[in-house]
Image (cartoon, rainbow, N blue to C red; front, side):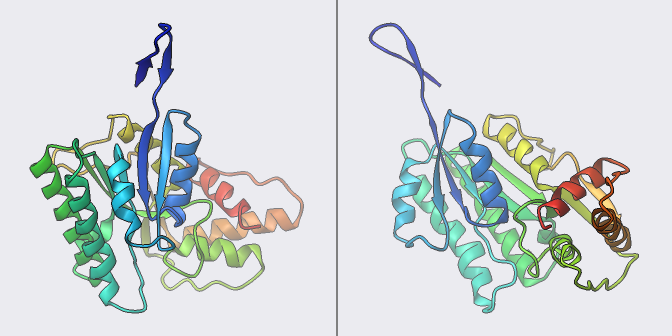
Length: 258
């Protein structure tokens, strides 16, 4: 958006974007991508913020990326308190804005499953879609696959991150079922899609959800073998030869753990 000055010149107005879950794996990558755009101002909210701060941040937001969630909390009550109740609270605050802003929700393919995490993500999705119907604001819900990329935390929810961390350090890894397949998405591809969504060009499907256009299907055995090949080449001081687009992205990820 451009604003005309009294001298006839124009000045680019910054869009204020709120990112919840800003300190997590996806949030850190998103904030870095947004801050590279001079037309965007970023507001951050995460566990280090006081809950009362959310009201002031929500009042300033022209667009919201709602990423805050827990996947493996020590207390199962957190599934409801964070994944559902925080979402409902945020949407209630946004409804007070003169122009309720668009909301992009980071959901998960596990929303299709009947486990505590999947159930809580479905409830968050329903709340966001309801907000869109009530306010007329655009809502974008992405059921993301297993993600990998820089800053992904090992020993939490990502086998790729854990294996990159361990193999880079010469530690053993555990492959439960080498034939089991994963659907994978690369964090930079998510950022590209979300920046398009921010500017009104999401990959929207007929059922109202949004998709990550580029994903990969690989078995656990294939991923482990590829990472061991990368490590062997690194130890030998030899150049690594990725065999396809997925391996290029996996190598870029692996190198951040070395």
